[in-house]
Image (tube, rainbow, N blue to C red; front, side, top):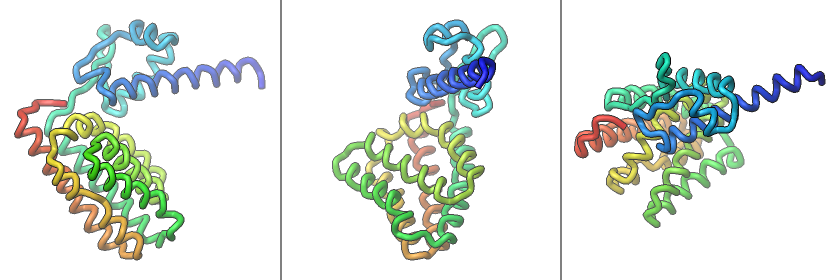
Length: 228
């Protein structure tokens, strides 16, 4: 491996590092909606040069998490109710297809075991009123669903869209009634997949996705949240 190759790989790793740190700061709300910063400021904070920061920001803009403003750096994009509805509609289409693809593969017990564990974790979290644990387990279930579907492009697209909705889910989680979380438990979806009834699993997941959309919009209206 020559010096040029090493330098290229090092640059790529710095871009990836900057991208992951910036994205985490956005999703964790450390950089809240409307937050603005110039490239030099971000580079200093991350301890890297401006080049990897610029490349990372271009990726984040493509994912609709920020916008780049000439001479003003980047701004974290807020989500308005219309955005959340659009994101939910896209996720519904992608995840319902993932359920069908996974179900038609007739997955065995070993393949489904991680999903079963995630469902159990969600149930325990609800019993213990641990919303953070519930959110982590719910995210794990959906990540497994998308990955096990076998369609890499579908999984990649859905992951990008789920990242856009992550902040809204985290902010509204504690505003949602506990009953709404129980209502969208994926256990019925999982059980249908386990017994090989992909059509029922698909129908159930569509129903759950509709309930998620309705609940989010109700929360936004009830608490008069103009954006997230």
